[in-house]
Image (cartoon, rainbow, N blue to C red; front, side, top):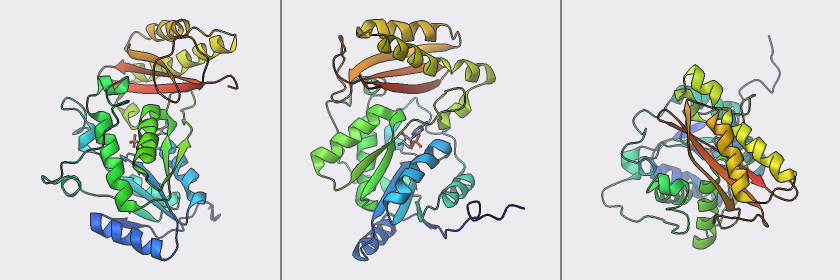
Length: 295
Ligand code: AMP
């Protein structure tokens, strides 16, 4: 039997449900001079979430993970009711990653009828992913602001897989002066290159094998870029051509944007991010890649 310390569960994780209980615990920790690290999630945790916890762990004294399937970021026709959940397994993963506090709030306490204030970044809310999911980024920014005010983190980790979300959060932190350091977590992939996602569980076997087209189309675009191609339309065409080979998938969009502003770029002279979404049935899969002169 393997009894090495790395495989044993050593932390005594606390689960907090109440909003005011979470805020009181965070305030107590602050008074004790502890730093707080934070990884917000919607649960159904996988290795990518664990990688964010591993990035946060050495940057703080107390690591808080939240699990909250946020109704405000789902559209009326989206998968709020069917979003996968497994709280028992999520707890195990958090314990393995030495999480100190698992914050698991209830939706009816997070959103009461009297709460009307929202956080909106008009430069990002209605473009690219925001155009496809009206209200999504308002829901994300609002819930992250609420979570920051409850968890009081010094550092928070967000995955680059959701690149536009990461930009929304960075802009919010800058505009509203949240005293939080935002740390980006690199995209974590399955062995064939598919970006890990809780929604990958929706794919049937054929869709799953074709889903590698997202990664491979980005690889193709990067090869072109490295060979000197600077015309964004040519890179987008390469992405479209690879995705078209996957007959179960349908390209929702491919966008090539300035990494700082997220405005579309035609001739690439600055770091850009290629963003794409491919639909397999009702499942939307996201991926992206940063292209810089150094990449
Ligand atoms: P979610 O539970 O899908 O809301 O994701 C919680 C956090 O994990 C977000 O910051 C995501 O960007 C991040 N995340 C999800 N999948 C990945 C991935 N494959 N690689 C890196 N980060 C990810």
